[in-house]
Structures are given as structure tokens and as C-alpha cells.
Image (cartoon, rainbow, N blue to C red; front, top):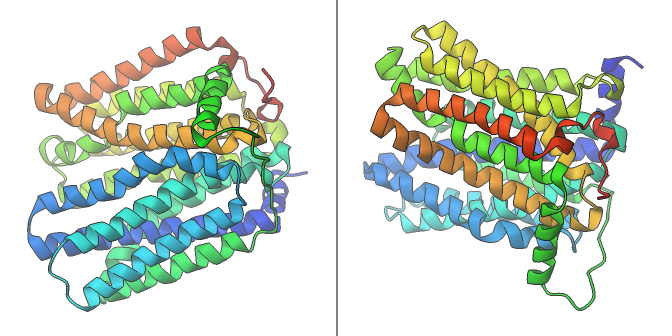
Length: 414
């Protein structure tokens, strides 16, 4: 079967199509809302700290509820859990719509809406990751990861621009659009036919089940190695927080150039994701080599970006970093799900989601601190070199992960 035929076959699977569409519109709504609320609050107060509190309000529920949500995903119908999460997302959009419609001037109600948004992320993250393997044949799950990640990246690119354009019609129009999209996501998830609920272990509590999931993860070097490799690579090697500094002080390109720089990471990721999505299972790359190679290439891209004083080369380096990150995500997401038994996928996915979410935030903090002490260029170079050091260490600590060949052969057996 040709590659395009295989990819089309996946898209024609009803439940996967609903899942993919639901994820796309949910992320689109989230990105549109993020742009609109940031602009509205700053325009309302003129205080940059307002944006900091807004980010904190959205992040705290993720930190607090993701692990319990993973246990919940193992013992309830994931369709309904995802539907509920997106109904909460719709409630947040409705609250924001009301607040701007009545011209609310205090900020705490907006933070309350953002807490609801963060709760959506906490509930939906483990559920959607652990639900995805049930929607397509095992041999084609890696392709489904590529399609899902590509759709998310496209929504991440389109959402802010679309949100900013619609905002010209008024803040209420933007939040009303987010409300409709969130409701569509909820309907799509609830309409999925696939329904699997793992049996709850007798005589256990949520805490003991969570501890059991963490112990299982620690005893699986392939799964644990893939999650921690990404954790430290993003924590050490990320350069997103440094882009405004490079745009203004090093490349001298202004805000329009900064926008292009941010977009190039996603462009590289989407291009690679669509390429991987069209590869049939027998032509997929060696999994272990692709994972380590992708992370190493991410580090090399960070070094080139740090050394570059030419805008075109910097854009190319960022695109390479996006492509490398997509390659590692493609392997890691597949390994984590296929290497975890169904009854523990929610809990392991929760750890995965929490690690990725927290390291993105902490990685930006790390980059900012190093840049404030040493400068932006040394911060980027240190991140790239540090990423390569992590790759070298992980090849020694997790040789089983390096030896993984076909993704479909990954097993949850010890």
C-alpha cells in the first residue's frame, strides 16, 4: 500500500477522525483565547504583572490536578472525561464572554476563568494521550501520533493569528468563537464510539494507585528513559524565552522578525509531522536512533542559533529545532503509550503530561536566568551543549531505549 493510501486510511477511521478534529478545535480555541485574554488584560490595566498572574492562574491547576486526573482516566469512560474537560473549557470561554460584555474592570474574575482553562488542560491531557492508542490499529499508532501532533502544531500556528484578527471585531466576538469551538470539541469527544474502562483495583486508594503507576514507570527503562530524555533536553536546551533578546539586540529584526522566528519552530515541526504521518509502518525510522538523533539535532540547532548573526540562518536553525523536536515527540509519545499496559496508561500519561508542561515553563525560566547572568548567546550555547551531554549520558543509562527498532514492537512487558 502506498504511503498516502495508508495515511488516508487512518483519517477514515471514524473515531480517530472525531478525536483528531476535537483536538484541533480545542487547541485552536485555547490559542485564540490566550491571545485575546492577554491583550484584553494588559489593555485594561497597563500592568505587565497582570499577565504574570494570568499565566500562574492557568498553570496552577495543571500542577495540582494532572496526576489525580491520570488516575481518573484509568477508571472512567475517557470519552466522557474528555467531553467534560471541554465543557469546562466552554464554561471558561462563556465566563470571559460575560465579563467583557459587562465591561468588568476588576481582574480576579478573569483569573477564575483561567483557572477553569487550566483545569481543562489537567483533565484532558492524560485522558487524550491514554485514549489515542485505542482508536487505531497498533501498527498505525505511530502515524496517528504524527497526525495528532501536526494538527496541534497547525492549530498553534493558526490560533494566535486568527484570534488577533477576530479580536479586531471586538473581544466578545473572540470569546464567543472560543465558546463555540470548545463546545464542538466536547461534542466530538462524546460522539466517539470506542469505550474502554479499566477495572479498579480492589482495596486500593487513589494514592496507592498513583504510587503503583510511578513504580511501574520507574521499572520500565524504555518508557522512563524516553520521558526523562525529553524532560532534561527541554529543560536545558530550550531557547524560546531568548527569542525577543535575539530579535532586538542581536539580529535587529524587530517585532515582525520575532513573529517569524516563533513561527519557524512550528513550521519545522509541522513539516516533519506530516512527512512522518505519510510513512507506512514498514518505512518508519529506527525508533531508538530517531529519538536520540532528534534530541541531539535539537541541541545542534540551539548551538547554531546561538552562534548565528544572520537572520536567515537563525530561522533555518529554529526550523531544524522544530523538526528535531517533532521527531523525538513522534517516537516518545508512541513508546510511552505502547510501552504501558492499558490499566496504567492514564497515570503514566499524567506523569508524561506533567513533566512536559513543567519543563517547558522551567526551561524558559532557566534560559532567562542564565541569559541575565551570562548573556543570551552563552545561554543558548550552554543549552545546546548541555542537550548533547544529556544525549550522551542517556545512551549509557538507557541502552534498551537506544536498541528499540520498530515502534509497533514496543511492549509493556518487563
